[in-house]
Length: 393
Image 1 (spheres, rainbow, N blue to C red):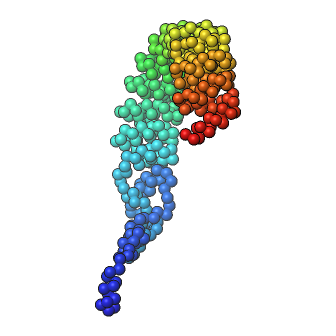
Image 2 (image 1 turned 180 degrees about the vertical axis):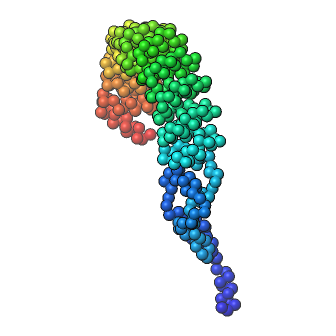
Image 3 (image 1 turned 120 degrees about the vertical axis):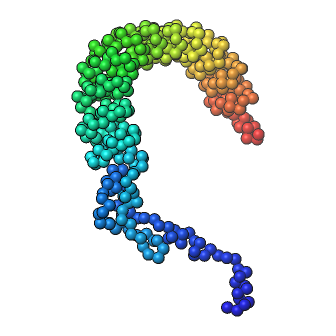
């Protein structure tokens, strides 16, 4: 190359060389390729538990400069100290080998032992071993395991930790006589689970309903689907408003109980009862002090629309204009209401007079004008003029 050619080459812009290219850098990386992917966390530890003196197994080759590098297994195969996440995944896997489960039963981490205690694949002899764990969370997990025997549940029912006894009362494997023994437990959580357990006898439930001083325990009895109607009637007169509220929510609550609870002193109970009570009981609440109750009366009792159209609360007046049987004169009067929600509801009502819709088309609120334009009672020429003016703006 002459000097002139060399000078021209030096003036040319430098191109991306092969050394700096992405392909070259990708080849320079040492990325192991494992032939047999690991599908479960237990496989990870099963391979890591193999003796390191075994013959190396060829799993693939990677580009490591000038020569390929042989990989003899997963990178963690020789790791004697797996991480907490790896141990937790293995302890909670039902397909983990028994040897690894015995290893995790002595793990220093509380979370690993608790996951092993809740594992449905944990053998019974290991459950008996970790049943005496020093941590109550582990013993509670043993009590909640589906494979825990009845004899182990009896021993765990005498545990000093309330969370352990609560899990005993919660499990469906708990026998009725053991539930009867937990009915007078000092912990309300234990008694609550006794009341909610489907295996609890009827006489135990009756005792809890009549004698327990905790309202949440009595609520757990009422929330059962097999509770008698007489208990619901008795609970409707309970001193706890939470109890009366759950009586209203019960799917098998008698209609006469709902009609009675429409006059409950607690506003939450009245609001829940008026949605499912009879029309006669609802009409009696037309002068209720709560505006939501009066709005419900307006939405279900058309004979009181004229009376409630003068209500002081805008939600009651909007319930009047939302009713499909609202009279045109009521809608015309409420079209000038100070509440935008009431005017928009009046503009959307099919009984709204055409003259009222024409006035609502000129409302300062665009949503109200649009609702009036979408009303089927608006004259077509007025709709065309409004659309023309709206498109021009």
